[in-house]
Image (cartoon, rainbow, N blue to C red; front, top):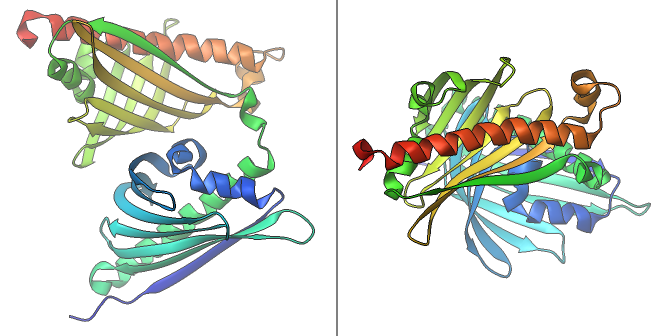
Length: 317
């Protein structure tokens, strides 16, 4: 059987920032879920001096896809080459390169190359990959340009925090509570509705309606990736409340003393433009951080407390 036809795509942008600053953003793949809108989660499976293997979960044309990539890093030439070792249908093969060139007058040009093939060369799949590659490439280049040109923008807006609960119960019982999100409307008082689909093994896409202490309801859309062997669940909201532009998180379980420590971690970027309309004309990012910390932390703390009660109950043994 002949090899599928190769197709190519090239996207580029000019960036008013030093090339080494842009290269650092491309190099640090673990931070891509915070930087790149389509990227949900990245696991670094292998790391060497000039190469690495990444497991990546990202949205493409409204679907969640997962693949494994090998990257070759060349900081001297300001290049990063990549090749998917494990693809997600309809992609049969995907490779490419990030290339940076410094401009004589300052700044740099960033070019993103892709070479891909579709399973069985089906025209509709070629179109699907072409559209997804174009959308995601344009978005990623725009994200990099904004971050590199305004490196201090996140100083007051991006923050992380965590809440933990000590639990004396089997770790599997706790994990089941956290991973079985479809049962949360019956288990969590602050969850009034939750629609859940599982497009592939370990991947959950959910729309959740939560109720705040003041009675208001907020709808969020999230992609979750479950790691049962590691007893953790990571997620990214792909539809955030108005006061945020980013929300990623993780539920994790680890042994601690004679029991378990169950932790909920959050990383949030505030939507600065929305602060005056929601909190008042004189409100500051600090005011918004406090509001979000109370609301999000309150819900996660409530979930942790109920997970503890569920796991420690006799029926969970």
